Length: 624
Image 1: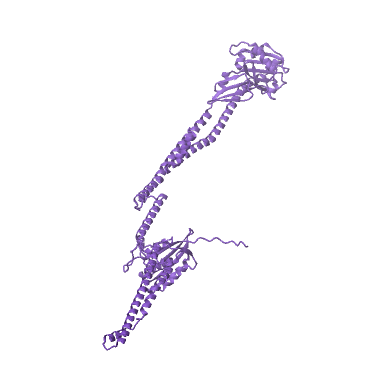
Image 2: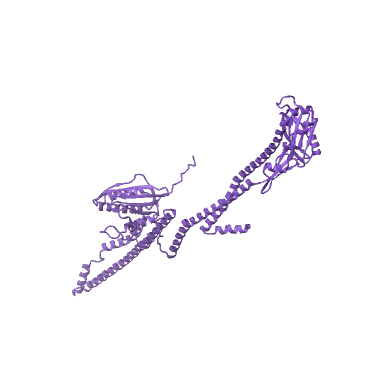
């Protein structure tokens, strides 16, 4: 047996083992506990049953011993009854004769009766005659005769006959145990007043008892109070009391029998335990092999594939086993779906160059841009409306007059002063315009910085707020209905308010884009159709918006390509940024967008999944 430290080490090793080791340890523990429990159960069921059978067997041995002793004594009673109901005996009691004694009490007569002792007694227990002939030597045994007479005289014969005319009992004469038969002496027809008793005694030996019981037995003069059973591992020692005239035991009939029933029960118990343990071990072994084959091996394949994906970075799918349709196969398909989604997301991230679109912050940005452009507008307006400081025609006339030679010196001096002042004003105006242009350049630089900062913020996640999806759908449906493209489209959408967590501007643009695509698909399929919108609260903290159109649809195999940048199903169009931008916008709003179609000409369904707003706790009026 391992000590406490060894058991602790085994348990610690089992806790740190792999899943297969843990399952093997658990199955071994279950097998051990099951074997012990099964052993206890079988012992609790089989052992008491066979113990009861053994007790019944003991009772049967006791009853057979009593029946054998009773039959032995009954034969003596039958013999003595013939002498009791006999006219010769009736007359002999009254008038004893030698002739009767020589005829009926001879050794030959007693040998024919198979008795060793005989006696006639009067009603007052007076002895008429008594003899004891040893069957082995045919000689008279005076000691046993006297002991027989004394024992008979001390016995209540009427009580031994139990109210009848004859009876039997056992008597112990020293070390000799004998069966006694007694009968009243009457006429042959049973009439007449009984004149006494006739007694016959037959010795019973251990050999005779063994022949009666068909087992080796012995008579023990030591009387037993009741049936005594002594047991050992393989034998039963049974002692049955031999009853006397008053019911008290005068000797004990002892014999030994094998414990066949108990041994059979023990062998059956061990056989059942061994068989059930082997069966349990086989079942656990098969179960362990099946778990390893059906569960552990596929999980090992998945784990190895995940390790290869982690090491290589290649999101290749796991090979599927088309024959398996159980939970492991479902796990593999889910794993492959996850890998495909991760691959698509990786491609979307790698090719993402399109901004998330306008947001509510664009209003503030444009306000800042306007404020920055106001000085430019003022400068340009002032520059456009500003006149020359001196009339150019006046300057030209003054210059022409200076060139002429007929001007007086004073006049020439004034003209020179005027022209110089005009050129100074022109230089000053030019300097003022340069300063204003410098201010305008600074304003334009600020505008460029604002635009650059907005481009940087465009890559961040937009703020989310609680929006009414029904209201946004209704607004975009009205715009799409009056698009003026010549199609006849019926819109169906719920009237109940459905709050979602989204960016109002982005969600409106996504819904408008999807409505526009649906309208184009309906126009391509014939020019008239319907767009049905359903909104479902999934109960898992999300809201699903399904936009179904009756347009041209698409092949299900092209669904992943629809979200790729640059892909378009319209041959006359290029770009393909609408769905790409919509998918990125939904991802930025912590949602998802998926497209489904049963095939060309079967229409399409766009599913938008958004977070539902958290339920607000009810306010309690403390004043109440």
